[in-house]
Length: 239
Image (cartoon, rainbow, N blue to C red):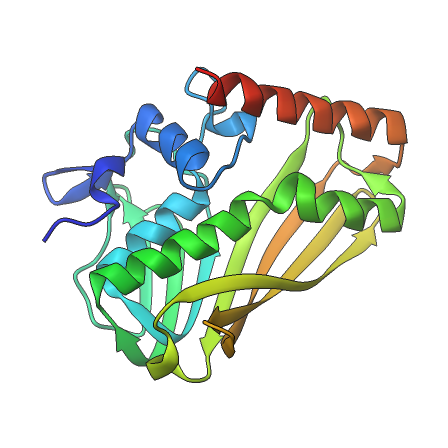
């Protein structure tokens, strides 16, 4: 059975690979994420974590309780092994057994492709807008900022818990609150969201990120950083 994720990966010898073009297209067209790390010509290119999340969700289904932890950056064309396993703990590795993603899951699971796609797209749309929509206000509040010449924001993990999985028919995510804990040049971010179906709250989740190379807040530099991001987005969407 075909799924929406099919066009964003390829399979070879039992492994799953993501090309630069596939990763970049997913980031921009599905997640609305214009992080330069996902540009095809970037030397530091990496596959979006949200693409790995969507791939895993498509393969394993949506369980009542799940946690995804990212342990390594995936380069283009890296063959990844997604185990054909029903275990509650899973590890996504490459041919050398290097780990990139771990999954913890428990409880009732949904495997309906259309519902999985709706949930994946809803989460990815939320996740892709973390910058500038959510991170800028948090940095402004704490009067710190990422280094505009080398911005480092690391996607650590995300966790979800569905209180009533049977009510999840038209999923959408709604941001509820965020926090930034600063420790010198490092920052830990929590972005909390509710999971809704129609107007009913059926669950909640949290995305965890790490910021590195923090420096004192400078409004002009922040404004320029956001302007550059928006310009990059406008250039792509006008093609």
